[in-house]
Image 1: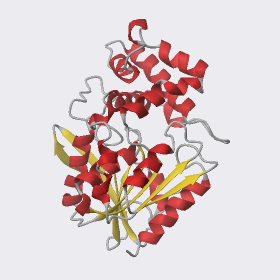
Image 2 (image 1 turned 60 degrees about the horizontal axis):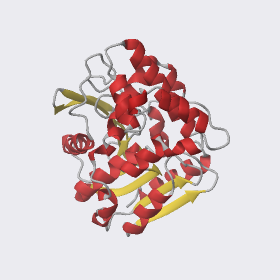
Image 3 (image 1 turned 90 degrees about the vertical axis):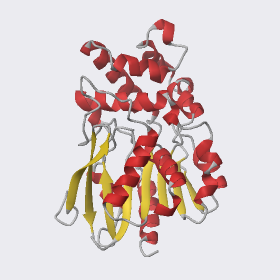
Length: 317
């Protein structure tokens, strides 16, 4: 439950160009250590649950909804949605514009899942703006990772993957499934769009359901969220995030001197732990935790505890 202490004390819409307005909010201590949250998806939006990782008496926490999702406009679920100016590098520029707008010198970066990819892309471009990095469910959105999650995971969930694949026209099933879905999700026929959105989100719920106690994501019950989310994820995955293959790993040395904590689940087979492990080997100041009974996300208390502990430790640095 939100209280006056956890609610935003400042918020606004930042004009980042390209007709895009990005929603942002700040909560916690106005004099506290700055931190920014990079949500997952892409397309999930910056929910209030992210605030629970911070001691709000010590942190000035900035949350924002990435282009096209949450409270940012225009909505990627809109009938005339144009995603041509919605790429990783547009988002990296938005983060930096927001930092300057809020008068932040350096900030801690917290991200998860897609937000981890975005965190690496941002920090490698702007290392002088980053004080620390804390990530969980670590991804880097390489072509190999996209192929794994949209195709190779079918070896683990064969029946579910066949249903996912078979929504795509037969002549496109051996190609880039994410781009094929992206085309369906922009089809003029709303019934085609809805069928594709349902199938995409059903597969999302499937490939992260590898740990005991997993519960389906209730947000997928909302047809607008379903379409927005599926459009953005398939758009980004279909282009492997517009990131040169292997570039985030190659450039991890740029993070030297920035303390970091990476937390990932051994059972997170949709975002396999080798991604976090390889990045930790290339980043000299990274501390890696692989949690044996955890899957994707912060569903296990042990993941949340490690993330919260890292952020608490950095509060006075």
